[in-house]
Image (cartoon, one colour):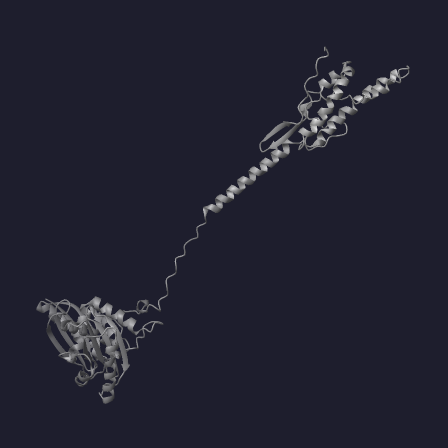
Length: 457
């Protein structure tokens, strides 16, 4: 059979109780009280160690199995010596339980038996009183209030203070269904009688108030989740939200849970725990910016290529014609030069001059009408260049004929001097070049005149 041992250590006595069941929810198998000798408070821990070892031996001989052991105390000054004694003996399955949590475990069991949803616990000590509300479903402490009240001896002022504390239960969000009183070194019967008339809810106490803490220690050690939940709830209830739990709020070493317990950040309230760092998402650079940059570079390169090609395609057009008339003739006009040389020898040119004199006049008039936008500057130099060239050739021919009396006739031929127009029709057609991106389009300015009629008619 499984049993659980609960021990309550007081300065003058050590009380023990054996409870049946793995969770200490059965009947009390045995209980005992051992008086402490007059050798001083340091002997109480030794009595506790002896009681634990003796109970283990008796359980083994009787066929019982000791599942766990819970030890609580009434004098905080003895906790250090008790912890050292347990560490020296290396005792296993021994849990140190604070008096308040032992009382809360017992209140949870009583509330469950009476059908309470929430049970109010009044834990009375010699110099202080703690009022807590215990959730019957899991044993956690959902509300807690502590006040300095001298209850040993119990006076009228103490009774008035306790009545004021109990009246606060009506204003709580979690209103309890009953009040359970547990004393720690204090006689609770006068307190019970006084509060039964002042409390707005039913008041109850343990059947054996001296063994209440030992029974609660056994319950707390047997229900580890209950113990952990109550400890966390108590820590949040006592913490003002600015730091670690004030262990002196109830009494020194009230929150000690085991021999090697260490208070850490687990007992901090939500307001005292630093917030988690926000996850910063890495900024994503849009690909549109990169694509637009590449496109801009491509467009700039194409434009630069077009400009360079355009600049290279028109080298002769941008050069002004020289006085000699040679620079104005493009390279493509080199082939038409032979016709002017062949036209110079034929003598019938003078006979055809009268016919060509009338024809050039309309041609000259029509040329400006056809060519309006093209630069007329280019048309005049070509016409003037041939006009100046032939006259010297004709003037050089007459000087040999000047000595004869035919000198007067030269004036009439001088009038036909303008007829150098005959070579004009034979000039190569002038062409304007239109430079477009990647291509050059030639555009004729004045088409060549029709060929002269044959001299036969």
